Structure formats: C-alpha cells, structure tokens
Amino acid sequence: MKNTIRNNIGRSLAGAAAALLALSALPAHAQSDDALINKLVKKGILTEDEAADLRKESDKDFSKSFSAKTGMADWVNSMKFYGDVRLRYEELDSRAQVFDNGQSTTPAGTPGLRDFPGRTRFRYRLRFGTTVTMMDNLEAGMRLISGDVPGTTGGKPLSGNSTFQDNASKKSIYIDLVYGRWYFPKNSLFSGNITAGKMENPFALSDMVFDPDYTPEGAALQFALNIADNQKLKLNGGVFVLDENQSPWTSGGGIGDNPFLGGVQLLYEASWTRKLNTSLGISWLGIQNATNLTTAAVPDLNVGNTRDATRAALKYNYEPIVLNGAITYTLDNFPLYRGAFPVKINGEFMNNSDAPYHSDNYAWNAGLVFGKAGKRGTWEFSYAYKYLGANAWYEELVDDDFGAVYQQPSPAYGPLVGRLSGYYTGTNVKGHIFRFAYSPADALTLSAKFFLTELIRAYPLQTPSEAHRFQVDATLKF
Image 1: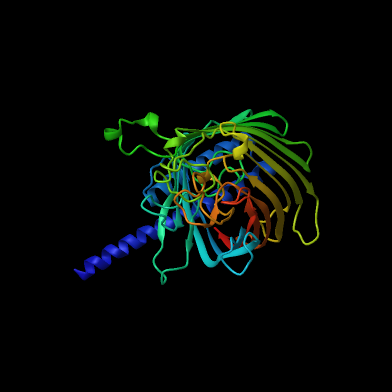
Image 2: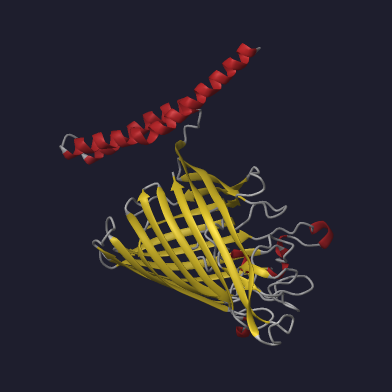
C-alpha cells in the first residue's frame, strides 16, 4: 500500500515537473527560433515571406509538443503566470477642532483640539494570476488576492491588504479576477476587445473616481482607432453589477431593481513629438437604482454620501460627468536617473448634476509627477491635491486610503448614520498627497506616501478636522 502511494505521488510530481518545464521552455523556444530566423533574413538567406512561413511551422510543431507534455488542448497558445507581493508599514493619526462646551477646565465655547486614537500597523498584499491565450483571438484569465474579511460578503472590494494581527492567524485568499476576452482581429486601423466576468477596470480614471484595487463585475468594451500618425481615439464602455436583489420571491423585485453601474469614456491620445505626449478624455458614469445601495446591501466601508436616516439609503442619484487630461514631456536625461526622464502634469474634474450644488456635488484633482519608477535605477516624485465633494460620486468606489476624522455622527442624515465617530475614508475629504518611489531592481520598488487631509464639511460643527496618514511600501513583482 505504501509503495503504491509513493508511486502515485512520484508520478504526480513528475507530471507537474514536466508541465512546468514545458511552460518555462515556451518563451525560450520562441525567442531562440525568432532570433535565428531574423539573422537568416538579415543575411539574405531567407525572404520575409519564407521567414513568416518558417515561424508558423515552428510554432505549430512546438504547440503540438507543448500540448502533449502538459495535457492542454492544442488550441492553447501560451500560459503566463504573474503577480506581486507588497509589504506595508502604516501610521495614522488624526485630530479635530471642537468646542469644549464647558465639560473640562477649558472655558465654555472655546475651540480646542481633540486627538483621536492613532494606529500603527503592518500589512501585506499578495496577487497571483495567470493568463491563457488561445487561437481565434481568445483569452481567459484569473487572479487571486489576499484580504481581510469585512463580513459575510467576501473580501473587501477596494483592498487586498491583510493586517498582521490576531496571534498570526491564517489569512484569506479571494478571487480578484476571472474573465473571458475576445480581441478584434489585428488591423493597422483599429484594435480592441470585449471582456466579460470580473475584470480590471476598463476606465482610464484616477483614484478620485475608482480605487486602483476595484475589479468590477459585468461586461466591457475597449476600442482604439488610429486616426493619424501617433494619434489615437479610444472608446471605453462597460455595464457592471453592483448588487443582486436577493429576495425577488417575497419583494416582487427582479433584475430591473438591481443596482447597476454603466459608463462610457472617450479618450484622445497624441504623441506630437518624440518628447511631448498629451491625453484628453470625457466620461459619463451612471448608477441605476442607487437608492437600493443601502449600507446593509453592500460592504459599508467608506462614508461621505448623504443618506436617509431610517434606511441608510442614498439620498441622491449619481450620474457624473468626468473630464480629465494630462501633458507629458520627456527629457533625454536627468541627474541620478537611468534613461529618459518624464515630467507629467495631470488634472481631473467631476460633477454630479443629480445632487444639488450645496451638497458638494463636484470634485477635482491636480498633480505633478517627476520621473517614473518601475525599472532598475528609476525613481519618481509626485504631488497631488484632491477635493472630493460629499455627493460628487458613490462613496464605495473611491480611494479607500483618502480619509479624515469625524468628531460626531450627523444628528439627522449624513455620512455617519449608524456609525461611531473617528477616521473614515470616502468622499467629503480634501487634502494633499505626496509620494516618492525608487526601484533598485526591476523586480523591487520602494515607496513612501504621505496624506495630509481634512473634512470638507465636519460634523457636527463646521470646523476643521485633519488627519495624517503615512505609508511605506516594498513591492516585489514577478
């Protein structure tokens, strides 16, 4: 019996090793064959047409071998593994300017500063995924991600961070991406794809609109048209499910009552010279059945939107227009920087006409970026100012690192219905963001980020409150 078990384990390990060897051989094989064929073309031994035919035959023969060794279908062209590990140290402290009201030795009605409890924590984020390309322009992908558990709904929509806590408890892994994609046939005039499933966000917008870790669920279209040399017109669109009506048999509801997010974005990108690039975009986003997004319906992580005091439902609809643009100029070199040095100026404006102006229905940001980290010997420094009005956009989609401190909950309706006072991320926040990053190796980037923020409208008094948030990251990518 033991020998049988050993033999089975041995055969399984041998099969796994053969599959891994075949996977690792795929890029090496393609690179070596291509290099040899290119040399033969360069020396005039082969024509371009003969070289193309030879590449097809080489790929065909290798595909058969790859399929035989891995057991994969012969229509699978390649499989790619990728991922990253981010280790983070974070500090948070905040304070609010309040009136003492005679409850201590401070004279009644005298403004003072109240410190809220700070926090120091260590965290990590793990992402590991695979992409499979197939014949007929098809692709499938999936990615796993770490994360803390917010409740019974699964992992947090806006974060993959896991906190070091609870006596080294075992941590959770969630599905972050799972999608199918079809690419348009290659064409010199246009390109694009159609994607369905849980995917990377198709909209090219900043974290004022979508947290970078948000991976929506639904369907999307991305299309690019080459309108001139080095000029493209891009169209991004999508329809995504925000929640599902879980009691259609008792409430009489159906798909028409489910909250959906839809949007369309038009981008114009141009390279005017080798050094100067610009982009300009306009987007429309809309949430259908926003009033069904109560705090009990979806993970209630951020705050800021005005809500009804009885149901904790959103008071306003959200259909903002977003304008964004950027200018990048690249210097040939810069001190202590390896390679060409980009300098970027960018800005964004958002307005939600479905909410009244007095409710802070608009948002904007502006920033400056020097350099770009990610390759050995490169670094970047950036500064941005962000003003994110309370009802400019849905609170549960925006950056969950951008927050400030509330002294007390709103007495009637507001962002803290059913909450305790303290530090919260979401909308109704403005402030400064500084970041510096350096890459000592292609696989490693070190960065530090500092937030200096305050509420736009403090509760219950219209007095300033501020928060300081500091993050140090080490990110390893593979």
